[in-house]
Length: 379
Ligand code: NAD
Ligand code: ZN
Image: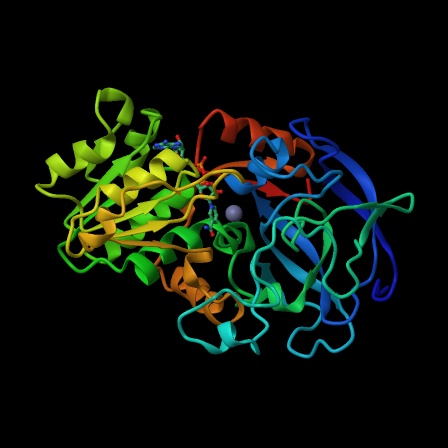
């Protein structure tokens, strides 16, 4: 029997307050409205951005909320005006959207859609500002327009990438955020030339995807920087050739890297969320041509401080969301790269847990263990 047009009751992991374990609850999910689709989530994984908004130490506390933004699923039903998606389509929800009409979507250079760019403070749908989730009629907030820690979720059509139905959703779900973000930050934004050196700050899943981008670009040296020494062994499998732990030196890590490379790295990609690492990542690039790309999500009160002479010396500072990919136009082809074995994803998935044990994924990330933990919604 079709559930289209009906309220669906299903399980969701609700964050009731900051830093407290999520609790699995029965929620009501309203039907999709104009330009919205309702998706049955099959697999979701945990990204560090979810953890920042769950512990809410450096971010606005907005609760109760259904977190989650890295996922894969199948369209259950579509709202009015949705023509390019239909029930049964395999999709990845994406935390930043593409309306296909605004100046950003029409520009080749930007994925910062005017209508649907990432907005961490939005708690309802764009159409009416309201939530589609409730418990006994009381609204539960959305997160990033995706809220994938629920068996069903409602997403704006501009935040949905339709992908090859043969792609295994338990693997390609990580392309919905982390792997596309890191890989794209290197190949689309830092754009190292063959033979150049690249420093990667933060060797979690996003950083190692950035390292993968450096490897396929033919980088000669890939220098991994992390405070957690247990990251180094794992990173060797991702082509990282040298390791620097800032804790091992009594001078700023940018000075260490400048000395190691005789003047600085050609490119750096920051994937930590630490303001200190962002500054180091900029200051360690070579003058004249070095390019630094910031990817980590900063705390809301962070400020970037560097001497302007660093810019006068012709170092370039950039930043990116989602590796500059346009979610609807570009992601289907990134999924094809995985299908054609041009892009490896399996090695990023170090853990799998059933939905009922979603809090384990948080524990692993807080302990700095593993890369991506995939959460199976059917268990
Ligand atoms: P993760 O926790 O798996 O990895 C982060 C790594 O950074 C850890 O290994 C940690 O030890 C290391 N680290 C922390 N502070 C450091 C410092 N000062 N110096 C060196 N290393 C340090 O997280 P992740 O899921 O890989 O995400 C990485 C970052 O990317 C997060 O800030 C996340 O919010 C952000 N992110 C941004 C986007 C985007 O579109 N811009 C998308 C996804 C994730
Ligand atoms: Zn993410």
